Length: 283
Image (tube, rainbow, N blue to C red; front, side, top):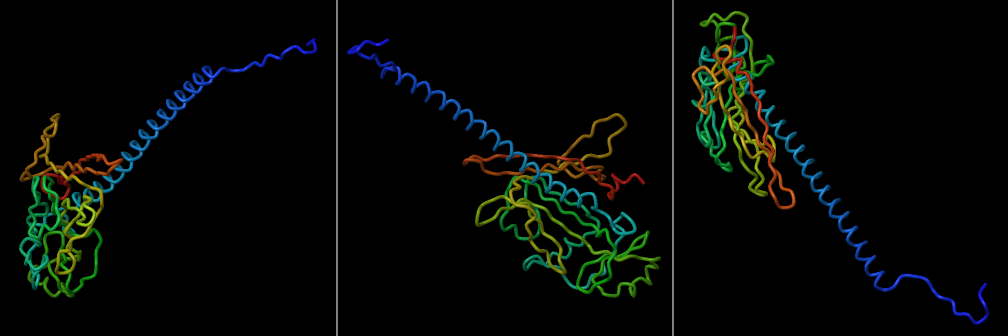
């Protein structure tokens, strides 16, 4: 029991103790914040890598579908049997590229680490491959004036741009021929001149002209290698040079983005069988 007039002693922290406690609190909060920021950066980097992988796979599969169709000529898979009955010329910008465009004897053309297309390069990134693929569209179509098409049976056929190719078949004696649109896709790595972003682009045959179109932004690398049919028990021997009878192609695509001012890349690769070329045809 407190007696009258007795002083009351106040309990609490001294200034020194408060400063030490505050310093410890700041240290713990700073550590937690640093750990959170580090975790967040790692999470953002992981998410970006996943996005880049998805983009690279999309581009890879886009090219891969064409690679697998290269040399397909409708009812047969020997485009060297096609003759040319196209009337007129094909242009890329103002250049006459008719001979290069039709070239049925070259369903697949490749240049290693440089741009080797007859069309003006405009915006392209050096150090990447260019890949040109020619094939018949998988679906049968009605003949159409002004479009380059393939009219073929199981033995041969011809390229044409006529609305009535059946009137040209008598000399060839084609049996139950089918008509397909000719596809030509020439892939290369370019860039957007406004933003500088890399892009997967291609020249595509449209009517009697080749048109430069964007396939996907953010793709900065394209590399292609080939192999002949390996022997039993042998590993494939990959080369940058297109062999005479290629069996398969290995595509490598790189997607690029920027995170906090630093470039981030993701590369994916996949092997595609060249089923319609002589080396990849098992029939």
